Image 1 (tube, rainbow, N blue to C red):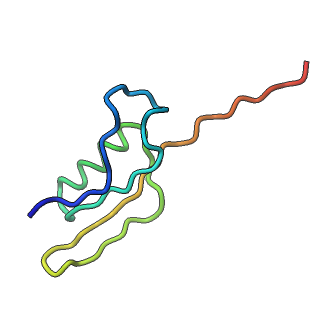
Image 2: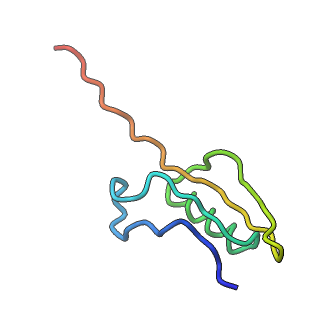
Length: 79
């Protein structure tokens, strides 16, 4: 069976501004899914919300949202 996913890998540039700020990872509840979530965390994403799970009649399908933390905004002090 083909793995389901709604995420796309980040661009190879590694530039945070070019990466998606939000990704929803989905797929069968297996080690491969856990590896994909772990890889996203290694890339700087953080978990967003609770995971979801459903049964499609053959297997458990899970989903986990991940987001990039917001970059700190620059604060301008009066001179």
